[in-house]
Image 1 (tube, rainbow, N blue to C red):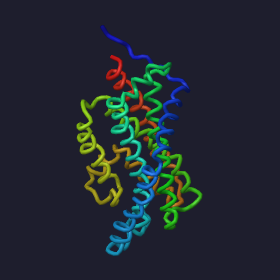
Image 2 (cartoon, one colour):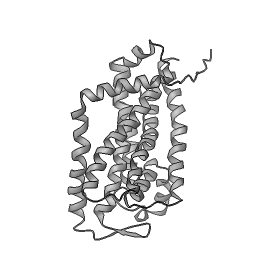
Image 3 (cartoon, rainbow, N blue to C red):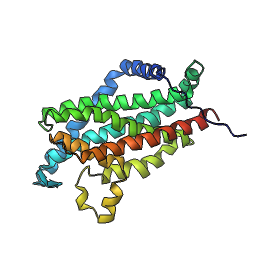
Length: 263
């Protein structure tokens, strides 16, 4: 017998978001320290260390110091990591080990509202971590205002994209150990080949075209332009890509979690 999946989402999903916020506030120091010190370590190691060997980096016709080139990509990686890991490992623990999802679905909350709340919380956590890192990077003079402030709403959009794909993996992985596969096959290639540490122009032609598929490529490009205080019309394509990626992955994530929890 085929069971059709309902799609029942109301503003009650904010109850799930608020529950995760309460837990976050109880362990805020643990969550606050990594995005505070991580950019300092990266900037010291890669920015100030490698910049002594690399005079200038060419980015779409602009000559940048290496530290100015890499700083925005650190913000983009922070957006990706916080949303993805929140909606993979953390969501899996709440679902499988803590049975939090079962408890919430015993209330008037629907399964779709639980998953939506989880994904929106993942995006919110990206904004929080990015805001902390944004402040640190700004102190080094590596963000131009006012356009640099666009990185914060961008963090929410990027968080929705990576949170949705993360929740999709949560719906299909058989065990928590299996997350090694999407991290190795999906996250790691993006981390290395999305224009984070070197320009895409340095890659072979076929690799440049393949990198366009990665959502992190578009996120890095947007954070880099905003950090440089520049806005161009063709950046709308990058925003549209992230929005479409989110709109595709979100219902797929809900469907995968429905099959796992209900079907």
